[in-house]
Image 1 (cartoon, one colour):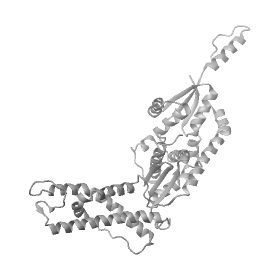
Image 2 (image 1 turned 60 degrees about the vertical axis):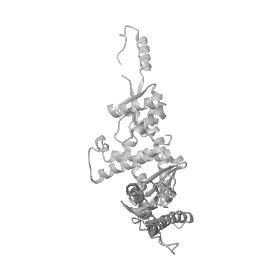
Image 3 (image 1 turned 90 degrees about the vertical axis):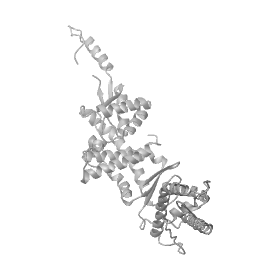
Image 4 (image 1 turned 30 degrees about the vertical axis):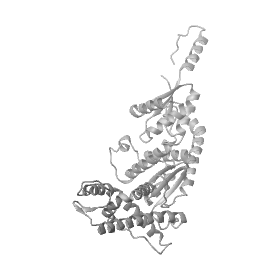
Length: 301
Length: 101
């Protein structure tokens, strides 16, 4: 899951079905329908020391609070109806976007990295889907995911390969140059081999460049349009103006879950481990807390 | 409440006046209690919003809540204290009102 903070709000992207389900059940978890949750959400203003004041509170203040809390939860419920299949888009700042940008940077350095392309190229056995502009959505998304993961791998290998490249590059005359002269330490390529190597590396990079272009094109033309029935990643956009309602509802759900399962400081500090329903509740509390923290960073209460 | 002055024949009015004055003088505290769920950052933000605390002051009180289990965040007239408690409850903080001792 990725949480992107944009000018207009937040985008939760690349959510697994499980994560999407955790969000869908948020309003239900926040509902103060049971005694434990109700006692926590509508707590006594006097710790029970003044029963009369508590009665007045229940009669005059609690209905307003109940209405306010319901308004927040309704906003969140409406937003959650917008959960959709992930669009495999290139949101600015996303992991995918950073990868593509980083890859673009590599392309710019192509002349000095063709040898590197040879080293890494073998690890990128990419086969573009061809001739089927509207091929099966799931397959296409899988394909794009594979490219993204391969680009990540590419980045990871880059530094290692660059080291190998530089250490293997020791021309006999001792002069430094960035032409692809050797394929292993101590051996210089013959000019025909060198030319072949450069062409090969160029093709690899060009192919990757085409794929990247194709991904963007596919997104732009809607070939990757959503189909919740057939994809496994989901996304949700939340407008900035709904931030308060989300913060409240996330918090209300956390508190209600905590009350229902008698969660203590030790539990939330991770000093006790639970399985079963309590363990699941603590996991939900943590998950909702993580989202709450992100939203809290840019929302006025 | 123990009278400040012992009643002497026909001096009941004086005693009542003293009691009323004393009652008005005793402030009410707004107390925020610890709970294991609310995030520290959230609690600080609520203090800043509801009571207009600076970030530093909000964090001091938040830490007091966290470490000591409670913090008196405001003292004064009952009506205003009740309004603050209602504000805290609307942000789901555990807050109570109690007469200062």
